[in-house]
Amino acid sequence: MSDTFYITTPIYYVNDMPHIGHIYTTVMADAFARYQRLKGKKVTFLTGTDEHGQKIEKAASSQGIRPIELADRVVARYHDLWKLLNISHDDFIRTSEDRHKKAVAAIIERITAAGDIYKGEYEGWYDSRDEAFVPDSQVKDGVDTESGNPVERLSESSYFFRLSAFQDRLLEWYRANPECIRPKSRYNEVLRFVEGGLKDLSISRTSLSWGVPYPGDEDHVVYVWLDALTNYISALGFGSDDETRYDEFWPASLHLVGKDILRFHCVYWPAFLMSAGLPLPDQVFGHGWWLQDDAKMSKSVGNVVRPDHLIHRFGADALRFFVAREMSFGQDANFSDEAFLERYNADLANSLGNTASRTTAMMTRYLGGLVPQPTDEGPVPEAAAVAVEKYIQHMDALEPNRALEAAWQLLATIDVFLQERQPWNLAKNGDDGKAELDSVLYAALEGLRIASILAEPFIPGIAAELRAQLGAGELPLDMNGATRWGGLPAGTRLGEAQPLFPRVDIKAYLKEAEQENEKKAEAAAIAAGDLITIDDFAKVKLKVGLVKSAEPVPKSKKLMKVMVDIGEGEPRQLVAGIGERYSPADLVGRRIVVVANLQPTKLMGVESRGMLLAASIDGAPYLLSADDEVPPGTGVK
Ligand code: ME8
Image (cartoon, rainbow, N blue to C red):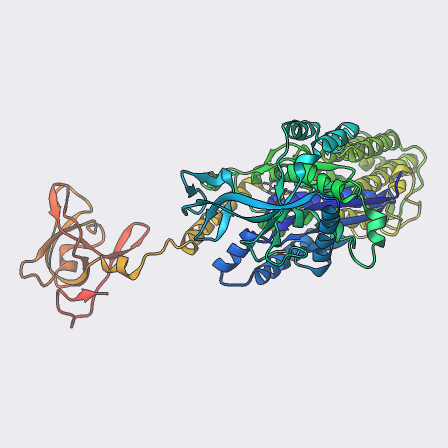
């Protein structure tokens, strides 16, 4: 078995800010990378950004900046986010880097030499306003359904990759390597697709300038997928003067991707590599989709998705844990605050946090914080051995949620064991209870130490904190440390105890989340341009009016009939809901502000030909007034 492990995430587009989906893939890749390091593998973990193409060019121009400026901005966001989430990538590749361009040129040279590239005409739907081709799937009745622009059938010169010639070789590869695509359902999907036949692939554009220049033909740039997929070898120095890392780490052990881009990774990429005479990746895993309820529903309690907020409030590890534990790897899952909070309280605050804090508190109280010498640790060593074995099996089989389940079974065993043995009672029995007390607390400590190793790939920050609290901070951190019971030496002094995950009041949190979300929605509506123009405002004719007379509308508590001089000769009759705060005597002689061009209406059978303006405090009206020197009928702007 190889002693290296090379894992990659997709490189993310820079026309969009990172969101929960990008976080998910990267966190899972990080967990696998960390796990392989614990096993002693030499790991390279790569992530990065996909910066070329029309979408990015367009997004940049709509913001009035150059594509590279947009890319720099979004890349900075990714760097910050990965730091915040404790992502342990070894490299970050950007397709705008020279090392990448060199690798793209090198792979194209090899594919060309193999005779798999020819020049032809690419025909498609062209949007002349945006100066770009639009995918067939996006066109309906001669219109681009995304931009609304008209499109026309056009063709341009393009280089093509002879993908059609690779059908048999690809099918052979899939059949000889039934694990090369996972999960199984996706393997079958890809197989069916390729069995259906393959079309040659356009790999260059002349209608685009933001891309890797096509080697030897400056009219063309390399079209997106050949450019993007090559990142996996360009980061290893392929095509550079020094290919040692490429030689050491290629082929990749695992390309982790979302199911949306499986086909590119399982059809195009292996075909490019075959043509170039390069080894194929060991495995591509297409994970499922995080779903969230639509924006409207997200306002309702429990469906507010706010990863930034969750990280800020509960810490990176809580979010990392949730996404890893909640989603069955490979399937879709729904993201909701409610599910997050429930798991947080049950698995983190309770199973992990509470078991740890009870153990360390008893250690301090009964044993002065010094790790005791055990004699009989009960069922915990066996439970630990089982948990570790299952954990390793599931991690190796890419079932991270099940690996976590196994680790948490160990925590449950410790919890039940403490309940049964009741160290608080043993402590009361003086010397008689001492040997058992020592053993029980040792078992809990050692079980927690092992659990902290299993948890490390998923919650590295808290796992380190827990190890420090257990006095295990200096012990080597690797899987051997998990498989060996008794790693925590007697006499070790425990670190300072701190709560790991304080419990959350779910109801209060959700209420607060909902309120914040409403505020955000309002702000977003304003930001999105839900503003009125000065012309909109000018439609409302406001005038200063002098109240001539006022009387209550019969049978109404609130309504008042008011006659107002607004400079029209005859006073206007208005009906206003101000009777509870103002009497007729308060009103007569007052200068108020009136909406003069409101459609007339009837209130309690009385005609009202306008509206007066009042501030409203909890529904109670406070009239707006004008200074005495303003003549009735003066316009208000
Ligand atoms: O496709 N649930 O970049 P991209 C789970 N640049 N994962 C999700 C997700 C969701 N709702 N949304 C996104 C690209 N993802 C290309 C890739 S690779 C050579 C080029 C994750 O920014 C998932 O991993 O659109 C998906 O494959 C990826 O983000 C797409 O990121």
